Image 1 (cartoon, rainbow, N blue to C red):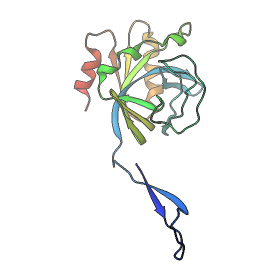
Image 2: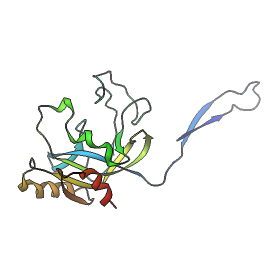
Image 3: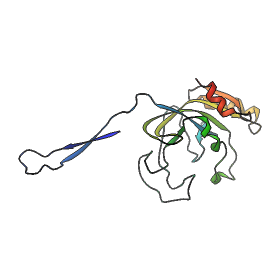
Image 4: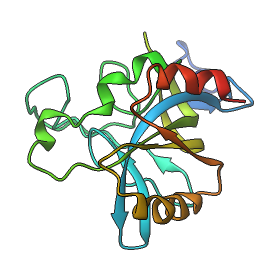
Length: 197
């Protein structure tokens, strides 16, 4: 939250005027917000990595993923002019999204329409820590900084058994607990919330 401070002019003037404005960042929370999200798992130059389902942005290993507005594209709208602002911003959809629970994750288990024709990539579901600027929404939050908290690799018949160990090893580079779950099981997403610490 930003708190504006007005500074008055020096004494002796008839009318005070604003000579400078400062803002002081005041933290709202001490701990990061923890929410749920879905990642695609892709083979990068340094091995398997997590990436955004919607925009394909790679999540760096060992350092925070920092949000950037990509307003030129939206999952909900047609292409539109780019806007330059810090993410997340009110009035925009930008920021790193995390849901309050696994119930909101189902739409992200499949590729968005603009990814049609690209090879299918395995999915991972997990909890993510958001901090910095965080904006609350109807299904969760959008943050300026994020890092995985724990990850479940979703395995089905599209993920070759021989690849599972390689993918797990790659994702383990994030330094967070990594688990394997059969993605075809009924209630799989709700079950993750139940077993999550």
